[in-house]
Length: 521
Image (cartoon, rainbow, N blue to C red; front, side):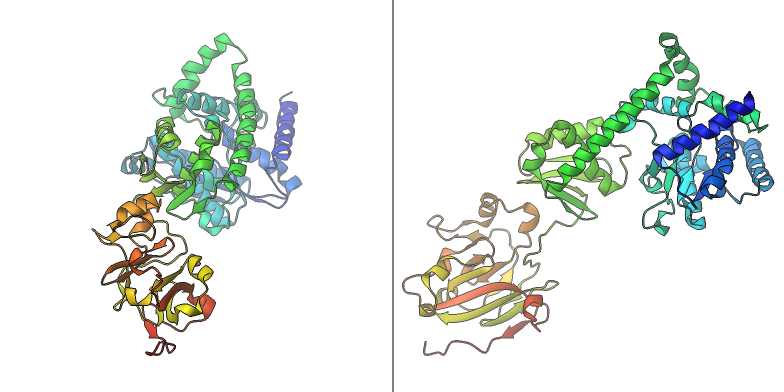
């Protein structure tokens, strides 16, 4: 009977592997083996299936240095088992308790992160496509219940997944070895639908003698207390509680997959701009999303910037949502991990503290530049060049003057004067935008009314003369140099891309033009 049950388990695991696409023919698989019943059963089952899948197995065992001689004996047992079964093995020993203290982590969490990082390194070393671990159905029930008690959303309540990327695990700075891959290895859990009692029966049927970890009885640990104290109580309310919890996890996993698909569709419509330090998106479009998708998008942004959602909880996301959902320009919410969510007009920006401002591909300056008139002036560190030429007013059509291109200005040459330069704004700058008011006003006030993002303002180029600001490129020229009836000569200033023109002008240098108007004009 035991042999029949054992074969049934192999067949069940094979069906589970096929249903979830856990293995491909010819895979190299790193198997995490602690020496306990789950991992020993997993290794034995994979050996039984290795012929069908042409698998290349490699065992990895990590001594956490938490249980003294028992941990050393576990390592010896795993090595001996691998020798008996002719399976290559890698064993390492790391002081998990010390690392946990150094990083401010609970020992359980530090052990989890270090263990997965170790498995990733071994996978990279042996070129494995898969990393297999022995989580079973009872572990899944405990995980779902733990996440529910901690207030998790769908992502937590779906429990562990049969197939996931190892580099998507929450490993706060621990190296998984994923750099050796274009995409990291897959983490697979072939026993996730298999109850613990079936695993123990399988070990008995095959005369496997797994190691016993006494720390599993320590009810000061959260998972153990839940396993030994809470679950038995819940089963007095519903003897099939474990089955119900697993079914709920499957339902929620499907719901979460649907939410992720909707989030990916929404992401394409949010006009996302992304760098390693900053992500911005359309605020108005984000606000039109259902609340569930607003939360999902916000968490996705955080995950992309931090590569982890560790320490991001409901309070953090809800505080940010409260600010972003109805706040105005300049309002911000602080997030863990040195992130800040801020409203910039119609953009929602989340950035690392100290991240450089997000600047579009337009002309920028951070130092004064002398302008050659006529001639060309290259902007340092940029492909942009400011070209200037002086032409007779009569040579330009009125429609041309009234409708300049975005980076073009037509100015009264005499009013503009000499000694022109480009520079960024300074405290106290005054600007008299053409057609607005009867005297100069605050440049900052104009930038605010024009909804120029704060991050741009310190690097926007201003075309200056000794009289003041002549042009704020991309926005307006000044009344000081507008074209009048009396204008005879027109200064045409325009930013162009040097790469488009093949200009030989070096960054920050000026080249005097040869097409200056004759003095007689």
